[in-house]
Image (tube, rainbow, N blue to C red):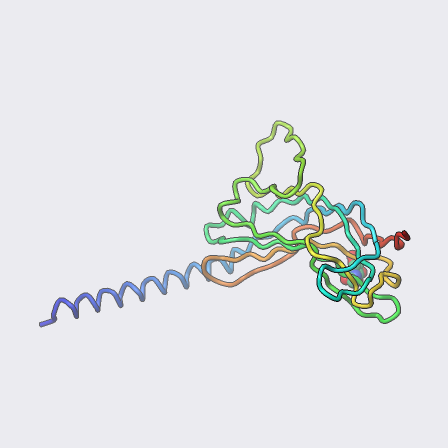
Length: 200
Ligand SMILES: *[C@@H]1O[C@H](CO)[C@@H](O)[C@H](O)[C@H]1NC(C)=O
C-alpha cells in the first residue's frame, strides 16, 4: 500500500515530466517556425562630428559623432508568436578605418519591446505621422527623430579615416522557451557618409 504522500510524490513527478516534454515540444516547434522579417528602413539625419568629451572624469577631448534617425519596420512576424517573450532591438554603425583596416561595430541605440508594448510600438520619437486610415499594426515599429542613446566615438579619437558607415537595426527574439534567434530588422539605404569635423 502506498501512503498519500507517496502517491502525491508520484503524481507531481509525472506532472513535471509532462511539462518538460511539453516545453521541449514548444521549443522544437518554435525552432521550425522561425519568423522572417522584411528588412525595413533606417533614415539617418543630421549626422555631425564635433569635438567633445564623454561625461566621465578625466575624459580627453575627442571627436564625437551624433545623429538623428527615423526607423520604419514591420515586426509583426516576430510578435505574433505565442512563444515570444520580448524582442531586443539595437542599432549599430559598422565601419572600416581606411588606414588601419580595423572594423568597428558600435551600438548607438537600443530598445526592449516586451509583450505589454506589443499593441503599438512607437514610443520613442516626438512626432508620429498621422496614420492614413489604415489600422495600426501591432508590431509596426516607428521611430521618428530618434537620437543616438550611446556616445559614438572612435577608439583613435577621430573620424578622419572613416568615409562611411553601415547602419543596421538588429533584433534578438527572446522566447519563453527555446533558443534565442536574431536577424536584421532594418538597414539604411547604402552606406552613410561621415561628414567633416565641425570646427568651432
Ligand atoms: C557595408 O555594406 C556594404 C554593402 O552593403 C558591404 O560591402 C561592406 O562590407 C559593409 N561594411 C562593413 C564595415 O560592414
